[in-house]
Image (tube, helix red, strand yellow):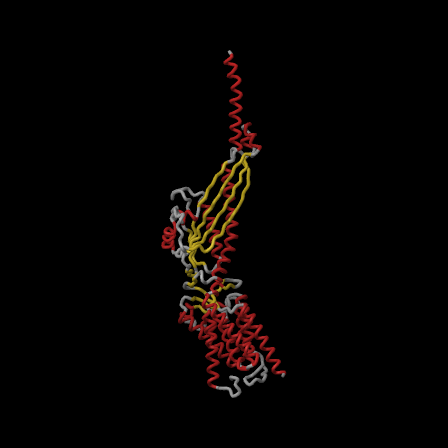
Length: 286
Length: 203
């Protein structure tokens, strides 16, 4: 009889402990991380190897390949970005490149042609296959944090898990475009795109909401990437112009030439011509 | 308004005005530039006038602006004293440049721009004005040195590859400027040899 009473005292305690541990499970945040890395792709297992890039020899117009860097795991690893998202982003990057006359053909390289850790050997193969001189390598890094808010206590009512958005989601995304001259192994320029998406979800539609936030995060980061890429392309043109020791530039066949003496020379000439005219007038008067 | 002897000569710079007006008209009239621009494949197909007319075609307003300003000022100045010489200069520069492009620049499919003729005019004007002596000589010598420095920079640095206009990036061709300068020097030397000036001022 005394023993039976002892069990009845323990049962509520056990229930309380189980409930408390469940609450702890709810309160502790979750993290999802998806990423692909240009460094892992180009320099796999080469932590201590330093490659010395040569001076890029840019033949204008340049043929550009655009590809997503594969995730590091294995060549059949699932891409976190679906094909539609990848193509949409590559189209936007290509449109930005096409604005410039020094860009020739643009090729979208299928993901299957790039192997994880393929490095420049893989890029050399792409160069031969597609005839591209320069590769724009797209990579991404997305982290999603999920925390339970105070509203998640309503999940105990079961129905609360369906209708109360107690999950707080935080999605940080970075999309990066690194443009390499394949032959010289030199990075010409890079442009990042960043985004931050905050959202909430019910316990039941949490995964669906996370997927939506993920897509939105990539889309916003792509917007930012395109803005930065435009600026970087313009900066690259200036850099090539101002630092001829760093870039050798030749023109390919079929370009349009032009004659332009430029504003600077014209302004100096006008100033000097005015000076000469003034001297001439003074001399005639004398 | 100075003639060869130093006296003022009346008259409008007709040749300069005609060339500048033609360049402007080609910008304004849709389709006209396409008929006259230097286009290598069409020249080889028999449209030989493009060798000469390409210099009057510009790719955009900003491309035309400074070329026209330079040519108008230098051309009008030179024409007041040497109208016939300016006419020869324009014709020879346009032809020499077109032939050079055809013979030695097979990769260049098209070309437009007055800068070759403007270069020739600036160099020719400087050469004609320099012998007058005094501070004017220094001014025109400075013009020549600036021109040489600009062309030298274009050649050595390849900096003009990405020169831009409001419409499109320009592949500036330094050869056009060099040919213009060479024609100007050649014409100046030929005239000087033919008619040496008694007063030291070349005719």
